[in-house]
Length: 305
Image (cartoon, rainbow, N blue to C red; front, side):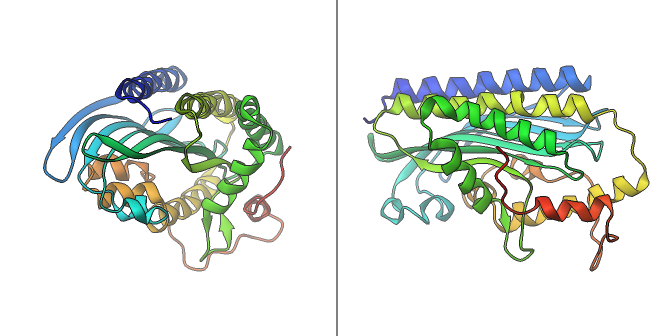
């Protein structure tokens, strides 16, 4: 069923509300306010508006960004049509929320979430529409209890929509957040899906909202449990080194980053996902048997439940 403009507007308003609830919860955890940066574009290539909210130099979060954008363009970028070449000449609208949180304490994982709705159209006629999104977790010093709790929350968010949702989109996440040149996943995964167009728009919107709601429920308990863990210079150096993998994935492989840059999006908002500090070390090898060496066992797909 093709969505109405009212359907699309309702989902767009949901993204604005979710952004406010997430930033309010993160501020309560950190104690620091988010900077609000509203923007608007009105150019031939890109039109629309959004709100970028960024927390920097917090007590718990070294940097965190929660972005919402509502944009339209005259031609879908290549990042959006690589699997839908028949839509290459279509105009589009895109509504999305994207966040990345880089904690200060190395024992708190980095986390990312994104949910989005695309429409491709000729004039007023919508030719295609689809949802996408996902959440994933990138620990530096992983704890099995945290990993299981993360995946349990993600599983439970999927459960009302079908028994196959979690295993299908968990496996897609493992494939997507993968660095082939390193032979490792970015973290312990979660969910990832794209091009999701069920017969009923309301069903797609409901599932995508469930994914969006699951992020706070999955992430904040881990933050509260680990944010006061004592650490030293060695753990901090390893965290900064591993953040380099985040940079590599986001710049080389992430479709959202590529879409934003190809569409002429707002550069500051797109690259907000990068960590504020990072360390690159030539041919780094952790000591055998160390906590740092242990991470390698977690950077491959695993069934956590």
